[in-house]
Length: 417
Image (cartoon, rainbow, N blue to C red; front, side, top):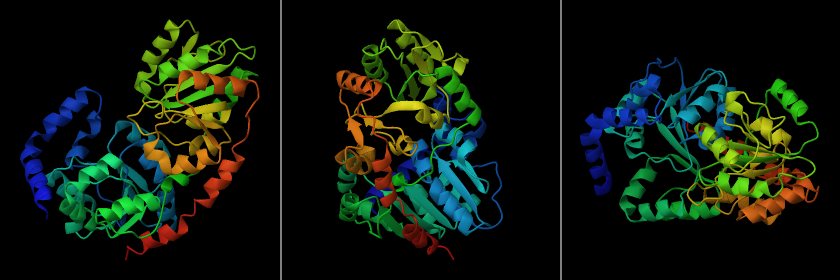
C-alpha cells in the first residue's frame, strides 16, 4: 500500500466513530434517508440473498441509469443471480425504486471508512463488483479485493482535475487501479489518461450510448396531449441552480408567439420546484406547479418538479434544452434520452462529463449548442417557426453504431465462475 493510501486508511479509521454524527447532520439537510441511514454505515436491514450477488455501483442518477443495460444483461444471462445496485443519493434511490427490474435491489453505498466497507462486503459477499466511470473509494475497493471480489471499472473516465490530483500521488493511483481485474475506458482519450496513471486498458465501453427509451405513463401522456392541444411545448430538462433564469429570460422573448408556447422546466432536483415557480411568477408569466397538481392548460410556464416523468416531456417537446450545461460546475446531462424519443436537443457549452457523447453529435450538427439566453431565445423562435425541425434520425444512427454491449459483457462474464 502506498503512503498516501495508508494515511487515508488511518485517518478514515480515526474518523469512523464520528460518521453517525456527520450522517445526522446531512439528514437534517435532507441529504440522507432517515429510514435507511444504517445502510450508510454498512449495516443493511435486508438479508443477503441466496446464490450469486453481482454488485453494481454508480454515484447518482445518471450513473445508475447508465448501468441498467448491464443489469438486464446479467439477469438474463444468470437468472439465479441477484443484482445489487448501490448509489449515494436519495434521488438515485427513488429513481431506482421504479426502474430496477425484478431480481435487482438497491442499497446506499456505505461511507468509505474501513469498518463500514468491511461490513458491507462481508454482508453481501458479491462475486463481482462493477463500478462505473470514476467512482474510486479506496477502503471499499481494498475490502472487496481482500475478500476476493472480482472488480471491474466500466465506461471509465477521469476528469482533468481528478487526473491531475491522482497524478500528484502516482503510487496511490497505481495501487488503486491495480484492484481492478477489468477496466473498460469510454474512449481512446480516456484510455490514454487512465493508463498514464497505471490503469490497465481492456477495451472500450461507453454505457452512455446504451439504454432503452424512457418509459411513460400512457394515461398521463394522453391527458397532457389533450391539455396542450395544438400548443408547442419547449422543454428545459434537468436544470440546475443558475440555469432557470437563463431559460426564462429566453422564453420571455417568445412567450407571446401566436402559437402560445408552453415552457416546461423540469429541475434535476425537484425540491427546487417552488422556488423556480416563484421566480417565474415574478417575471409576470402565468405559472403552474406539477407537484401541487396545477394544470398546464392555462399556464405559460409549467414547473415539472416530479420524478420519473422525463419520458413524458421528451415525447411532447418540440425542442429540449438539456440542463447541467449552461453553468460550469455540473458537467452536463444525457442528450440521448431526448434523441431516443425523437426530440431535437440543445445543450450549453459545459458538458465535460458527457463530452464523449456530445462531441460526435455536435460535429454532425445533430445537437445544437447555445451559450446565452439570447442564443437560446433564437433557437426557441426557430423551433416555433418550424425551422431546423429535423428529427433525431441521424443522431439515432450514430447511437446505434456505438451501442454494442456484447463484447464488453463477454469480458465481464469471464470474471465470474
